[in-house]
Structure formats: C-alpha cells, structure tokens
Image (cartoon, rainbow, N blue to C red; front, top):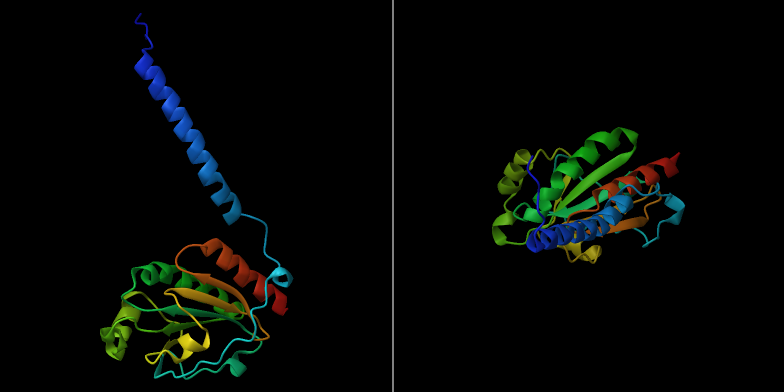
Amino acid sequence: MTSRISSPISFQRRTFLASAASVAAAVVAPAFTHAAGPAVQAATLPDFGAAPEFTGIERWLNSEPLIMDQLRGRVVLVDFWTYACINCIRTLPHVNRWAELYTPQGLTVVGVHTPEFPFERTTSNVEVAMRRHGVKHPVAQDNRYGTWKAYSNQYWPAAYLIDAQGRIRYKHFGEGEYERTEAVIRALLAARS
C-alpha cells in the first residue's frame, strides 16, 4: 500500500485551485442566473419613443421597401450590421434564428446594413455576404447613414426592438445578451395578443 504524503507545495496548489474555483463560480453563476432569470413583462420595459422611419435607404434586399406604418401591429427587430464586422457576423446566427422562429408569430426582422468601409457599399458584396451567412430577412442598404442617424445609432451591431404600436422598447449594442433579447421578443409578441 502506498501512502500519499502531502507536501507544502501540493497543499498550496490545492488551496489555490479551490480558491480559483470559488472565484470562477462567483463570477459565472450570476451570469447564468441572469440569462435564465424571470420572464420579461412587456409592461416593465422602458419606452424609448417612436421608432424612426427607414430613411435614405439606397436599396432593399430580400424585400420590397418597408415603412414603419405598414409594420404596425407587428414586433420589429431593427438590426444594424455591416458584413465586414466580426461582431456582426457572430450575432447573425441568432438574428437569423429569431427571424425563422418568430416571424410566423408576428416578428419582422429588418437588417439595416450600414457600411463602415467604402467596399461595403457595393450591393453585390452585401448580397454575397447575405448568402454566406444565411440572411433571408429584409435588409435595407443604408449607404448614406440616413436610418443610422435617424436612430442616433453609434454601434455595430445594434439591435432595437419595436413593439406593435411602433415604440422602441429595447436596445442592445454589441454581442451577447441573446437570451435577454429573445425574452424581450417573446414578451412583446405576447403583449400583441
């Protein structure tokens, strides 16, 4: 029978690992708790005002031109993106999934492609990127930043959720918060009924 002798170094290592595990649990647990937190109620969401109209759109892809008035009664996700932005590319699978899952329930997803670089203004480049990333929802080509400015937007990616009455009820900038965004989509859809 062999016996294990604990050395001061191995004791220090175990103590360090236990401490590191505790810190990791303290940091990670709240993130999971928040993500799986209580359902969102539409009535508790802030009202950021009326959603601006799509302004200065050069071209619509995957759709005829849309106006906010014709979208009344539907929940609208306005997703500002550009195809060379890695953060935007990482959000697209989520945006595409929401379009697929929730369009039949009353969601309209509108991508607003606002270029950061001159080469992103070319429609054929945008179309290639849309095919590559499976974008099937309407995309407004905002080369002159008209809609970007109307929303006072400053970020790629940026998501704005608009309720059935045409009011902005949620904003998120950058990656992440996918569970929260989806919970808000569900809450706004439920409030339509």
